[in-house]
Image 1 (tube, one colour):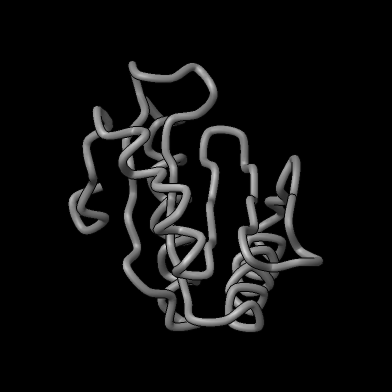
Image 2 (tube, one colour; image 1 turned 90 degrees about the vertical axis):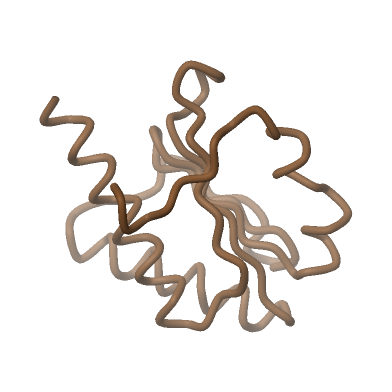
Length: 119
């Protein structure tokens, strides 16, 4: 039970960092029982590559202060779709056009969208 609460707190921290850099349309998908890859997707978008990179840097820097580092990072150079893999949580940061194109929320439509305030 303690581990589940730690993961939920980490989701909240990630969302807070996204909001600090003005990420758009933040969605948290609950993949528990749907996928073995992780428990949550946190998805957000922004209007430019520069802002996407700033959001990713904010998340990474904020979590590193807590001793939490991503196991894997993809897309930092192009910054159109950045993926930060924190094990139980995978963060997807998109330029809005790419978010629309790839449609993760549609692909994972069986996953409930979680209100972060209820975690």
